[in-house]
Picture 1 (cartoon, one colour):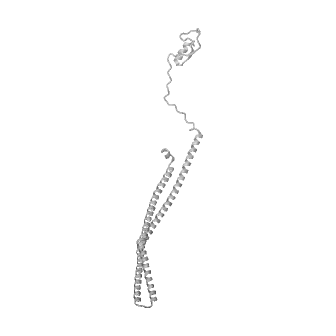
Picture 2 (tube, rainbow, N blue to C red):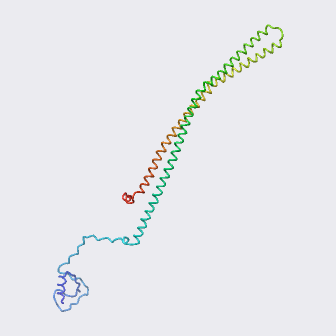
Picture 3 (tube, rainbow, N blue to C red):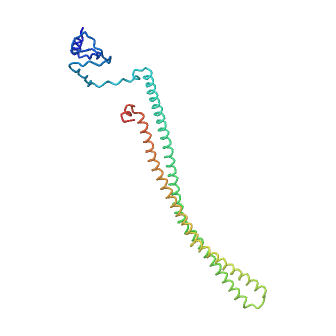
Length: 269
């Protein structure tokens, strides 16, 4: 087959054919023309159309691990482990909730007991103050009676002394006897006067110092008991609210763990 025929056939088939540059294409000849042996691609009469880029995106190679039995088994084990851990956490959360409920009830009952004790102490303090206020006039009256007796004793002793002095003033005899009798009466008057002073001092002390001080102590006990009761009642309310908050948190934690795992993943867990 001649060279020109090959050129025409290559142009029709749009196949680039490489020829040695030493072969002449313009005319058919059997004469050999010396030339360099450099090869150049023969130019077709019509340029070949460039291949169009495929618009279909090239599919990415699939992950070999999807179809890998070992990868699937590892994924299954990881999922089972995660489910086991979730079940364990749920069990612990339920036990913590139960324990928190028991502790909350115990602490609440303790607060209520303290409040009841405070209420009883306040009642006792109030009754003690009322009893004191009812008893203090009697105590003061008893001291007043002692004081009146001392006054009366001193008065009688002075009267007897004056009578004895008047009697022995007319008698010129029995001087020794007279002096003894008058000395006894004078001592009786002296003792009565001293007793009267002590009774007056005790009466004043009870009326002005002791009874007011004891009344203030009873009033202070009542105020302290009222404050203790208020604190105890506040502690009860605070403990109730605190228990409700703590139990609500733990119930929520249990509910979160009881929900299906898909729900948690949908929420972005």
